[in-house]
Length: 600
Image (cartoon, rainbow, N blue to C red; front, side, top):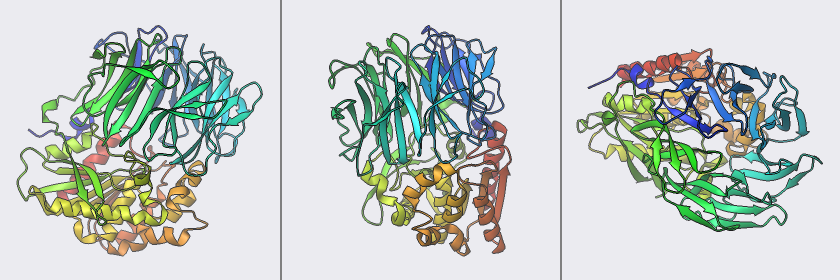
């Protein structure tokens, strides 16, 4: 049985769990209304109470540790300039905590009694982020700037005695630093001096306040769990990464209980444990969660349970609560599937194919159960980032096209995250087009699959994936029946000139700089090879996009249209880097479906 696209886009997802201070109530974000809002539950599978009723999606919600209230963040029209708000636990009163709509605000956490919170903002200067502390009673812009930065700083947690903040500095997507800010003296101590690029993520204070527990790839290809001593700066391994990255550490500083994820070829494998020494721990039973991806851990006040969001390729995202000691797992939310039976959802196969240099490229490959040999069209869906990873999560658009008879191919080309530092750097700067060649090799692999029609291959992708679509159409024009570019980059020079000031330095670290690499940036920009595009092209974009400005869409559409190639453009005036509102998602992806029906 086939279902309308609107049904698939009404499949709901529950994410971002946070336990209230009494440990009895759980908040989460749910998109039942069409945008992600804050909801609350007091028991598993109970009737949830909606707490926010905004037109814009809520991007974060965090309960106070002691008061019946939470903080949430929200931007306007997808401009990513998020403001912070305080919401009482019954959802009756919302108090704006920040009032600088031209600036971004990154949540930095509550202190131990919920009397203060920290955040980072680029209020002072658009290209840099300072660290702020604000009383929970203060409103508007009544916050103290506790450190004035000259780069991208972000607080990531208060020390157990509330006198210090852990702070990360992001130089690029693969190069971070860690600091501790003394709130009394204002001194920022650098804990991670290094020369080569190093990532530090998932920063947590240890129970004694003398160390940070984190994941890093310092000295290794994959990330591992480590303890960083604040006084000696020694970094000791707690758990090796091995062949796969350790990710997503959450540690309860009162008990030393923790949860981390190992990313095994895209699939989550969780470890639940408790510190027994500085670098030793005992493990608890593994929770029974859907096979797929899990994360966003929130411990209850006593760390006897934790909440986590989990999803699989054929299972939409829901919130589960796990007993730490027993591993007993209970699903608390029941996000609806719009009446579509879950048995109709298709699970992918994890495959690997050889690229031009004999490198193995991982991909997820899904084929409809009733596919006709040699007649099945296929969508090659390319992720953004580029330091991102296509993982086995629920994807409503994919399931719709599978239901309509398309196969679906999701490669993690070189440059993707999840496969070690060396793999992530294989597409940097002058190696950019090697990742495009990986797509060409993937299409050649698809040609050998018995279900696939070689003349009906579609390139589709968003953000950096949109660039990849345009690059595929210009570099290998004979392979494609159509292309769908969603908020993609057409011209690296104009993209870097016009992207948000806070992002430019980070993007240049990977793509190349305007000052030193302009000729290279021009040579790899699809706009300069648009005369090679023969396949029909659909371009979708948000007018308020701060990452990839809408001018990227306008220039590629104009250039392709001049050649008489079929090209369509759809711009959403109230969206940014992607489509967050249900009515816009319905229009966007219905347009995609109609476009592919016509041309493929």
